[in-house]
Length: 274
Length: 37
Length: 235
Image (cartoon, rainbow over all chains, first blue to last red; front, side, top):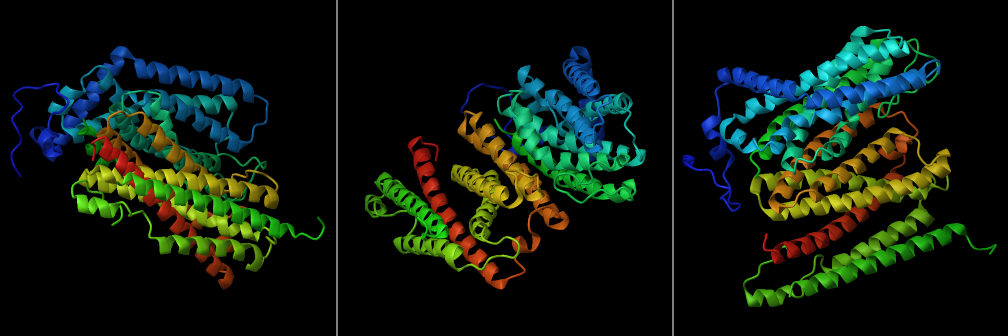
């Protein structure tokens, strides 16, 4: 393999010879030991930038609170089926996330820092650092929305361990899908509106698992016994939460297990694209 | 109209549809052959 | 290969004038085969227990979906090949496979919806198979939205390829879950085809016919796409 060309000058010509992945990144690949610190550095940079402008925090926060209010207002005393509550909760979380998760990469396109980033940053550390940031953002969202939702609707959660497991699975699944898709959207012109269009079809199987698992974690309301989406097995009241919910947990982690490595492997193709 | 089997009518319509599709594909085929000149 | 188009040799180009995308005997075979499927579905096939006279829809609705789902996987595969080789013809193939796959899925859904209306009383039931097909259609749609938002052809190809591969990774998830947990309205043994060997044979025959149709339409679409690429000097 021939050594990379020395980068003495950066030009804006559009017919620059296509560099191979290695040529672009060889100067910035790091050994494993340094990977953690680089990832953490990326994470800190994201956090610092976000705390300064508060763009994603604001949009996610506002959206979440408004939708929470609407759901709260419309469901008090309305005797809403528990499966609907599970769906509403994830609706709020999902769409709030959609407003802000693309930010990590789209921001680079908007502020034109992406070229400098391509030259200097280790793509692996970049990927994990930004993913970590998205996960943290989501965690903050979930930590606020989920308890508020339970309080507002007096949701009878019969198994908090299952409920939390589903929340964690949701966090990981949403992070895994959104990070790679954010990079994709940023490279495809950086239009934020493209992100939900791409993300939602891919997230659908995960969402069904999350809604189903959350439903299983709630006290049975004797109203609707059918399951959710792709898993129509009835959730019967005599089943424990985990008996009913194990299928959904498995589905969610299957999603993470498949999409996680896929997105890690595919990131390079996006990042080294002109 | 009493004696005509509705099954046969639907079958006939389906066949005509298929014929239409096939003829369309044949026309495309000729267009492609022209393209390659 | 009928789709290899070179622009140099005049003798070869004279030979090319007559070259289409499917040899005429195969065209005739395809016509006869699907005509036969139509005839058999309406006049020969035994009614399935519990479905009665609506059985015939089966032989169109199911193969349409099988081919539609395979087309998505093909889109993923061609996308992968494109990323590996960076030859734009593979992106053309990926897009062609997606277009046809979408068409087949939409047609299959329309037929299924009519069948559901007759059989189960509602146009849409959120039965697992219906839901998963809806997901497929949404994936296809998102793929085309993405492609249409990118100007540069090589970028469109590469980014579209990444999305297609992500979509395919998500899809087998759907396809694996359904057989294990299916307990919805969809008739299980009929779709799995294990009950009546004659029905299974007919289903396979219908499937082969639709696959043949897909292959021909695919090759046509690719030929047109590649011609346009060459005209624009991309290939």
